[in-house]
Length: 300
Length: 324
Image (cartoon, each protein chain N blue to C red):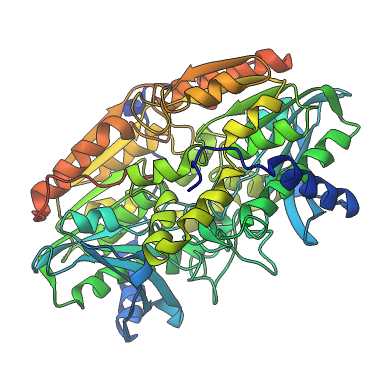
């Protein structure tokens, strides 16, 4: 029986193969201005890119409208769910942003539309076919696009998101800043037994139906566990930490925090959404040389 | 010209109740009442547990659109019927989750997927962003005309179940789920016995759009930048769909909770909603909280409030936190 937290023996070759697949396929970016989402502060484009498969993914790409640039960059990796919004108004004003929309999510759902619930376990009994292998590739493709843009100050690019942001930063070292929260894949096989909440409940449901596949599932998700990736992150990282004793708590994430290749700061979430947003925003703005901005307007 | 933002309780809504508001919705509900519900349930063993049976459900709604959802009920070996019904209504971008944790508490719980949500988007699919502004200048084809009805129609589904106690029917959600809690409690006010609405969206649309640049309300700002000449038509249409105008029709006890730094659904609009309610209403406003609306601290109160009115058999258990 494999220890569920072990690093798979072929970890490097597994992910190198993804990089090789990406390298073999032209991204063929297609940008279209979206006048309705653009404003006096930014231009917003839809972008379509080819990822592994080949599969055409979607993104929202925005460039600040004032100043000549280059501007700090911000890659937003997608969270779990079918809909991803246009990047935040304040972020579009300050940074060149790219919101990646991975295969299966709305706007990248033809020909493959992800099911919710369902995505979490798609192909999970085989690491080569697990959907999150391709989803990571989609994020890496987005990273390559953003880092290639002339509007971006490539010495000053951040990535924000969950496990996908950490994996992206680990495999594309050009990122200098990382902000991560809501990790799903760390010690997932233990975490799933402590919750009935989705999406981890999808794994519980799958294994109730297919108990004989537990070893295979554990093997697939081990490739995604951020603890095996963060050693390759040299960027400065902020890791949002939840309540002690939870699967987002400092004790649960201790191995992740300690394994980073670069400096890491744990941010203890207050669960006051305004406070947490403004704190993280100010941290990011300082690192990227910009001004902090609250989403809650104090003047109208 | 800019001014310092006033405390939310001092805000004056710009929402106007159209004189034919009741007539407009009366005609829509009469129309849907003529459409056979034709409910269907398919057991989903994979997602069921020792305590809870999960079903994928479908029913007919306005314009004969087939609506999907999840129905989770306690197994009779776990808790014997009758059960109180609880409708869980979804946020704008989220898909309805399976309300298994509520069913484990003893509720016959319906997770509603109004038109445009996954599994209910075969006949109507404006997409995201766009749902908020789809046909926003025409009250007779505006997206939320059918969307609101789809949620209200889930009440009919619940009442079609013999294991449901028709005297105990609640509705709960946050964000767009908060809005649907308001509209469903109003449109089915003869049936709904309690409701809990978090960070209610779709209340004071135009005021909200002037108080934030966060999506989804930013969709309205985006639209009006491109179509500034449509503002009056937009305002007139939205008055027919504003939760503030539904509020006086609600008869049951309600809990409304807001975050006082909510950039998505500005707290002013939550206060305006509560001012318009004539039913017994409790408002919880949590400082420094945003669209979470103080979820960490408020969810126990939401459960206590709903459980107090609906009396599920295993009220000592807890549901998964409601997100919008």
